[in-house]
Image (cartoon, rainbow, N blue to C red):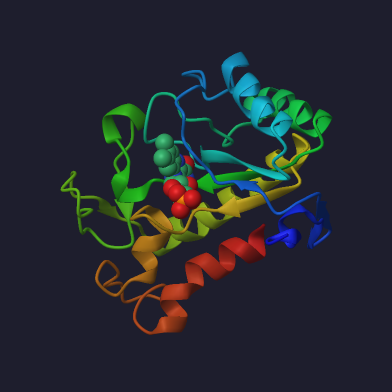
Length: 207
Ligand SMILES: Cc1cc2nc3c(=O)[nH]c(=O)nc-3n(C[C@H](O)[C@H](O)[C@H](O)COP(=O)(O)O)c2cc1C
């Protein structure tokens, strides 16, 4: 039979996943407006685990207060939401799946009105979707955000997650540092390739 490997276990770091079927992160707006996971979130993810997926990635989860892109986005910038994630993860584990959480800061794709804070980016260049002009992060703020990723990863582990994934694409915050089109910074986070990669590298090291 073709694709035999799809049904074989795979080791990813310290984690053994029972097969190669992975649910990618997909926002579903089932989270509660206070950033906790809802009963509906738990039922949704457990159903995917029941279906046989080896690894389930929980949708884009907000890493920093003030960076919430929508009213029903799950959040991990505060300890108060950990318990609700644990319920989701326990349900998936009970069906034999491993769980990863995608950590996200929406950056210029965010929603200032919803988050109660200005949207931010590497440089004050709006996203291609033509939203508001984001505020350029100061160097100090960039280092604070890096710490926030580490704290959110710690909360994910406390909730029982097997892994985290950092959202670095789709025009959200990290990707604004990677591209010379959206990164015109003159500090250590802008300019040459190594500098533009520094934010993502330090986030990974912090986790
Ligand atoms: C409803 C919906 C929500 C999504 N939410 C996210 C998300 O939270 N994070 C992300 O990185 N991608 C998100 N995506 C993109 C999917 O993860 C992406 O389509 C998938 O990785 C591509 O797989 P495919 O080629 O099998 O479609 C979303 C896609 C859909 C359809």
